[in-house]
Length: 511
Image: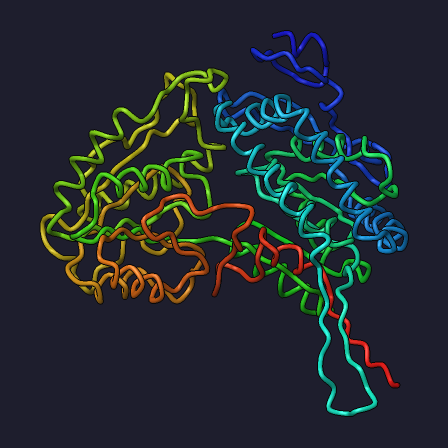
């Protein structure tokens, strides 16, 4: 409750006292200045644990977004001349400041997203790992020398920063996603206009507050604009159409990503898109079932199933599915602790909103209506708040194979984005690969086998940008993160995540 007493910005009491209440701001950050919306408009931010309003945040206009882009461009003209070593020193300073404020950042994430506090620490640390990684990559943005066909010429290449980057981040991991995009772009020598999701703007604001404390960045190197669901389309249009923006990076739904990419295509603006998935999780008959269960729990139920790489369709060989269900139920019963998200022992929290609850419930009801058996979960835990949907297991195909003319269960074609594990039996490797590989999505996939030949064969056959072979968690700062087909383009993290924000310039020198 002390947080409410020390800062009037929070509109409700919470069991946490902020060490630095100045991180709690509700204004946009444009050209190095904190500013309310010129219109005075604000929008509410809710605490998913109880559904109550926690903040009112500035609702910036398209004109203010244009001002932020102008500020970013002005800063870029100066920042692009910084040496790689100087950029590395500045990024290290920001990383140290972020790490020093780890507790408050985790608390903000828990307050506006409803993540259990222990999980919020995990997402802050995950974001920090990218800042650590990008520091090293700054001085490894190498060029090449190329043998010239003409004897009098010498050809070499350099990597140059692209310019202003518009970064649009999702609500499900707000600290990490902001640091992953902003860190890579700034490491490459670009400047950024960051637009966080309307559900979680406070994390982006806090990140910018800490960035402001680094001495040496030109004003406007990082800008933060804010908008609710109604104003977000206009903000997105300005980012797509403004000629000063040279790269748009978006993480979110496939539908929105397609629109943004199409609009950016009108001016051939560079884009990177990390979009929706429909990850298959395959358990072969020779798998270590306990390891597969542990991997599924880690993949499916972390963040209450609200990550783009969560397992969405769980294929289990028919010969072991009964045993797998028994092990999964027994393990699940011991895996999760419920209660206040501020309790460090709690490891499972609410969905982000009623909209999230409605979609999960729709998928569960649809599957049951089409013959699936509810093995566990399946109903809101009202005593733990309005949005706490428990881990749910569905078992399909027990009575008879589905009819070919029957509409597929929704989870087969849509991303549930919630804690529902539908188990689907299969007979052969060829069958399950045909089910796992879809024409639309291609973000992540997982499988478990003890057969070394199958391990290589299936890893290569799965048509996704990322594969977890006998592992349920695949995200790491050194790993190229991204998908193919309608799950996106470009890569985040790794060396490719920094290179994505550079242009390759070739220079031919005549002797």
